[in-house]
Length: 171
Image 1 (cartoon, helix red, strand yellow):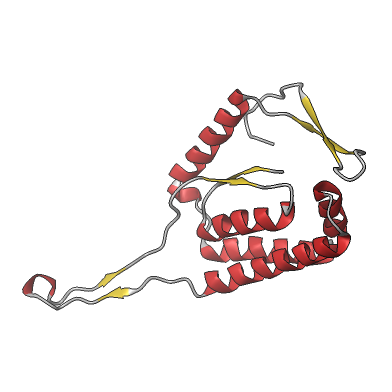
Image 2: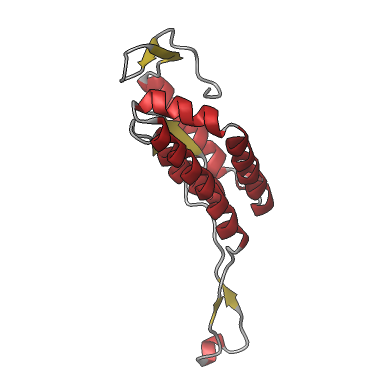
């Protein structure tokens, strides 16, 4: 899942903490894979022409929220299996994650620069100054086992909203 990275051949089996049954088998990352991910993300960040405009970031967040709503029960069941917690708690986690996405969309729609007061001294007379919000760099999102979906949403969502490349290390 990392552009340019070679498969390691090593796998990691994810097991349910409740009954120790296998949930999934994933490819394990090596130090080289991690370095490749960081280099790729950093290169994406440095390419200002490739930055997604706000309207595209909003579309990504809206589509994510829509998919999460459509798959809410599946997400809840899988998060409960992975975290070993009651399904009821997992459903609450999914609802909070979807709400978090909606909050990000609302924040992004109202996210704008501010005017900086000028004309307060001779050097700034007749001038206009504003702030502009821009991405600040690569985000590494690390999830914990107890709230795997909600914690990732609260890290990846703001990074996407801000336009930052994201590397996710799931629970």
